[in-house]
Image (tube, rainbow, N blue to C red; front, top):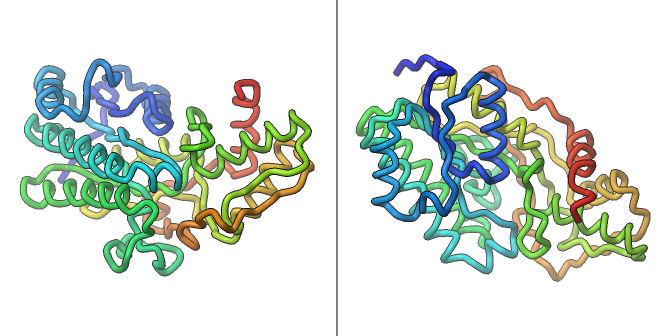
Length: 312
């Protein structure tokens, strides 16, 4: 299956207002792509199958980056379980099928590292998929993402479509969600630490025991990986995207406190869920394909904090 990248290609970035989608748009623009098609939720409801099909019929795009998704942290995933499953299933199915029907040259689907079993061997290789039970708190979201991978895989097998999938690790960066009820751990801690510093609070609550280990990737690194793979990777099989390094939630909290300049106590709350004990991706395959993360964690957090601290 051959594919020749061309900045003249017409590219649809689904979910362009989100953290990942907006980063992909920036990466494409930096590479000279000018025919980038985007739609807001008001302009195109991705849950509406007929509307999505009409969009693809009219626009006749060449490439699709499927970054649209309903996302959130442990609390949101565990509270809105039906919405996370239904909306993600429907969005990805509508787009992937319409891309097939309109003979799009290539599609890249954004999955998630939560697709892997809760107790998968670390670091998690791509072949760990479906080898054990999922983490219960985000199982519906993970099942939806697994379905997206399988859609790309089976459309490739049955129809010959050049649809590929990538599995990013935990992300942070410009455009992140800082709502304390629905955000992921890194942005939530960044906001909590900043607020505590400004208010002179004696301590900051950190959910869980602090022992789980997580890997964090700057979203601009992910976008660079996606564009690189869209240009160069045309094989079956999804690819992990990450740094290949992790740290404990306690270490993350201590690092964020240093960056923010917060000197109060960190109060871990073991009554809150820890989630998966460890999530570290094996990134040897994507490294072999010529991509590695370039932004260090401290550097990335410092850059993000500089940008967002006046907005809290």
